[in-house]
Image (cartoon, rainbow, N blue to C red; front, side, top):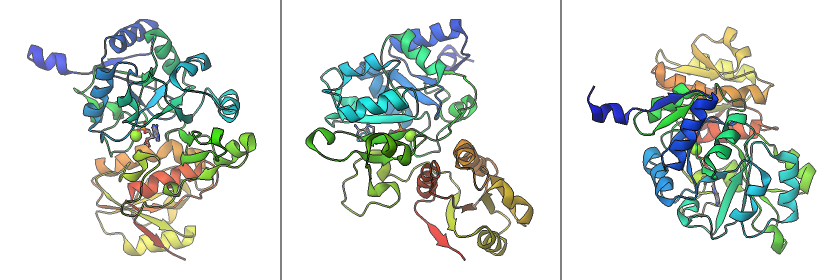
Length: 350
Ligand code: AMP
Ligand code: MG
């Protein structure tokens, strides 16, 4: 292997103290390092270094107008990044951080414009994964970290999936094992609350809407969470307007009862097609299948979804008929991701 090729390869690091020091040094030097979090793997760079942030956009092929989430290691690191912290935001930080909740507030001058893709706001999260927190602490800077996939693909939930997309494009990946939650954080916009507006849920995730409402009262759900934006409509969260989380396979989301789903798939699926179903469905299906959790267990669905989407392509599935999850609790996040993986193509069965 030539020297240039050796240099381009991505290092796989463990979460040992020695490897963490190496990863932190790379981050301080402006390099990209994929890190484990409890949601999905993040593609991290020093959030205060504009050139490092620029590299994230090119490594991912991320659209220039899609802002990044800034990750911090303790609550004290939040205040310098934002103009002010309203009472509702402080309450949520106390109750939900560390954890899968991202809050959007007005951006301070410390945060480069590039991080927020030109918006005057910034999204901040304090992750629960101990390795993520240790890396932020050791690198000494907040880390901008979108999901560590090529833009548009399903997010990676283990280090091997990161390397499938990013090998040779980033300096290192820190292997912290599989992610616990499996879907990205809940994104809540609080920029309007000081002027009397309601907090707005832009992306459902591991912290449910019900939990947010139990803490701060009524929360508005952005229409883009469950629907498709109309031509010319402005996206409150730019990441929600793209076809997203999508495998190469053609995904169709099938809504209806378990019996209706099974009958529909058994009738429709051809030899190159597969069911993307719940574990309970397997025995009744006469087609190939890939499971993503149990029917009445949204946490298990969130945990398995992105890996299942990637397995569709490994098995060269042409059309995948996906069983529709319930939208209760974390199920809303699973539904939101599947709807985008399907490019909003749905079928209703009895
Ligand atoms: P990712 O980090 O790839 O999981 O994506 C981050 C998500 O948060 C995307 O949907 C972004 O559009 C959204 N986001 C990040 N920062 C902001 C912001 N300042 N305003 C609105 N949405 C944001
Ligand atoms: Mg992403």
